Image (tube, rainbow, N blue to C red; front, side, top):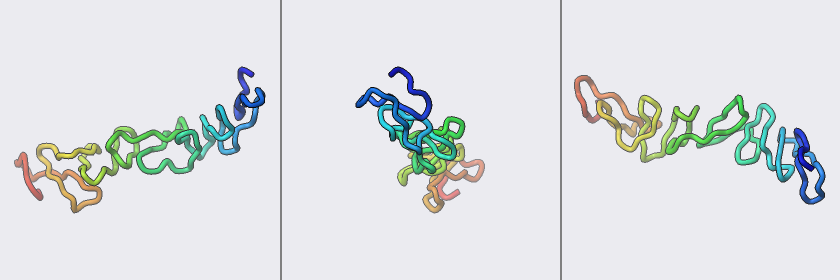
Length: 128
């Protein structure tokens, strides 16, 4: 069997087209090995999920969960971190860093830990 069409896969056990699991829009190799998901779910590691969870963000047009750029623990896109590991700080341009850039200082009093601006004209500071 060459092409079984949408919502079916080539079942190599009997060399016939078999239906995908109801949670999948399309699958391959097994009924539950999803490769496409119906709205409102998203593809995550061959399963369709309603929430991508920590470390991923939903790619709505492609109905898939995409990994955040390391070391982000939460993100809204590949370039916008919203939370970092405990040993990192979130910058104003939504990146996770271990050392805050010039003109900022690190604070652990905010959640998430972040880089805050120094009072002008300071290039380095502690607590503003």
